[in-house]
Image 1: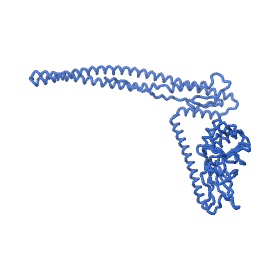
Image 2: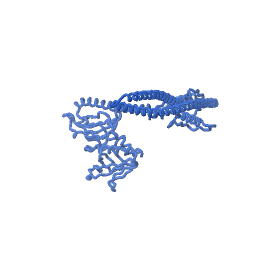
Image 3: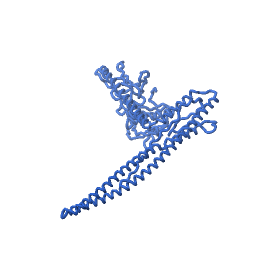
Image 4: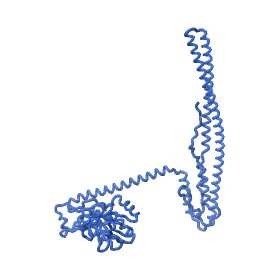
Length: 491
């Protein structure tokens, strides 16, 4: 037999509460400075010489009470659900009565049919009489089934009646709870109003005792309180998260647009430069980014060969106001170093008393991901890099064994296993810059003068390691009030 049970949802909607009006005329400037912190906790600066219960304790008490009331289940919704279930139970009871009437009519019809078959059996003989007896047995079996169904119907009717009584009693209890909660809410609202009134009286009294009231600060504080209440009442975390995602997407789009804009501008400049290069004698060949190598190449048959020319490289500010010579950079090729990022590179070529100036299309761009990599290395006390000594004191080094170049916060060390080539603290005679030769590994090499009379040209495993070592060493040296640069560089 099917048992009817009420469907009561566990997730109840919280009942909306009447908020206390925030339009209070505060006439004093002594209202305590407080703000909402994490988890809607009130953070207030400590107040000296407080008398009686502090304002912070009163506000915290009222906040806890309002939060509990906000979290309380809505008994009005509960009573409404009980009323709906009670109506459903009454409907089931009506259907049970209809089925009871139908069952009684079925018994009457079966009895009449059995009497008719009994009368017919007395008149029949042979095969027809057997058929009538079989029909009578079938009618009797049908009557037994109908009686069983009637018993189940009576039991179901009893269950429905019991459920209806239970729901009726629960509905009455829910109505009582509604009235009780309504009285509690009214009492809490009156209490909140009394607290606001006490705040107003206290502020008026402090205003009278204050020699120099600052109404402007009080108005600002009132606006902050109203805004905090509005945000607390209307706050929806999902909307805030959607706004954050939209802002993040907008930042990404702006970054992509700016990169694309810079790229397009550079392509325009390069296209204009390509048209001008048809009449130029020399141009730069290579990527104008940190970690690459720029090389001067001839683009005209009338240009003098570079082997018969004197060359000098310069770094120039983007606006052209500052021009610094790069000492030692007097070869047809030059590998930019971290000092060159954001500056324009220029090469002066002198031949037969004539000077030809070649400049890069734009400022040298930083290497992708180099900044974050350097930040990670700076978190360590020291950084180690595998290097090969290419030159020592200006002479080619015969051994190509791997050494360790250790850059620490106070000193730089070059060693191989237990053998230390050099270990020097940062001092004014130390020099460190990118290698300024014409080799194919110039972008991976740096020049390090440990002290006067001892210098090295070190080749790293990658361009990123070389530039990272330069940036880290200069940062640690700057912390020691030492500027690391190349020979005779003006920085």
